[in-house]
Image 1: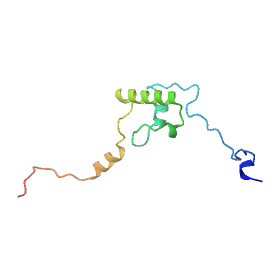
Image 2 (image 1 turned 30 degrees about the horizontal axis):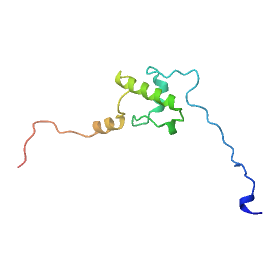
Image 3 (image 1 turned 180 degrees about the vertical axis):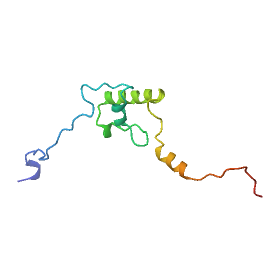
Length: 101
């Protein structure tokens, strides 16, 4: 049989539909920190739509809610937990500074 005359075959892969990360009862709001924090990386960055599996409208609402929560100090702008631990362990000199010539 000629390749061009073969019938079209559907893929045999089975796709499992992923559940949406935001349920129908969840309200996207800047006060809902438990929901918002799922869409922020460890460094404090807003994750992309492809990673979150959100619709365009949901991603826009999440982004606005995260920015409002940051401005109102519900969320930090940066997640500096690692930097704080390192800064505390480094001993710093105390006393007057002297110039070395």
